[in-house]
Length: 405
Image (cartoon, rainbow, N blue to C red; front, side, top):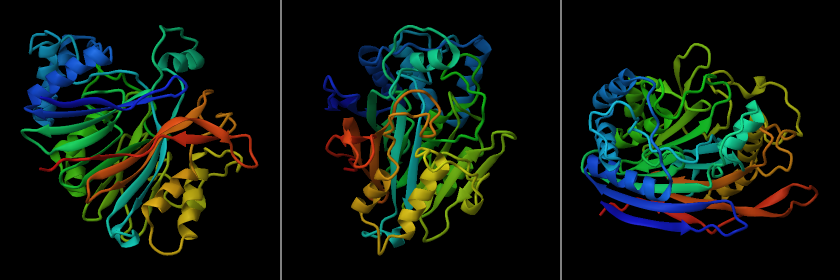
């Protein structure tokens, strides 16, 4: 049942993105069917095809064993697309749109260091102002059909399933599994960031020869099944995880103050958990923490490369070290402002693609309150003092939370 479907941040002609809020409730079959209908009506969703039926059958069996809720939602998707429930041609575990990738910065603050004594996470989500077609054209000389700008249509989805934990998730690219951020009714929080040293062989987003669970599906599974960081670790270790586009690492925290970063080594494929130190902030940017655990041994970088992952980590670390007293919500937003992506020349700033990149949203999440206060990117503002780099104008904050009544 769709309880809400509305644009909460509209897009003006000179602005980049819009934000749609969805609230879905009911059986997993109903949730999958309802989201698929919205995907077809609002997001031009087309299902990806498997290379061979054996991949489709294997995916169905995998989800039935490892993530039954998604297996049921996939049946709802099949019904919405008028497919046989045993269809093995199309991947119904994904509702893909406006595909893209992300790079970001985040800090976990333990409750002992925050004003309200609650563990909190603040983060920026950064991405290029271009479509996947444009990125592929620039990188590989491939000319594809025109496509919408990646991350220009962000969704927030509140899930209230009959079985499994309720959760609010934030993201784009997959309407069935909003991948970027989320918190569930038990006070478990997940956010993902690009891992530059992670696995280097990207898989298709859906269908093709995919096996196992994609990173968007992993976000949804953790929030649907797990109440604590320890439970999340246990579930992760039972999965075969693959990464459409670039690798990601997962920052996972719970209301009791536990936090970990999950990474997959880019060479060996081994799974690593880097646990936070009690009563200390935990900073994450875009380098593998299991490869670079000691900041004093970071590789050298040009200080002019403002978006370099090690540069950003050090700026956040310096902010924390120079801060007196506990951290307020305003302090956390200020920390994130130090590492906004707002450069005129992204390559000179240490970026990966020749497209302008912006912080598409910035937020502070209160884990025990199960709330996320988000500021979404609106457009560029006047140049910053002493530079020719534009400032960023955000929309007024939007608070995402669960209705626990």
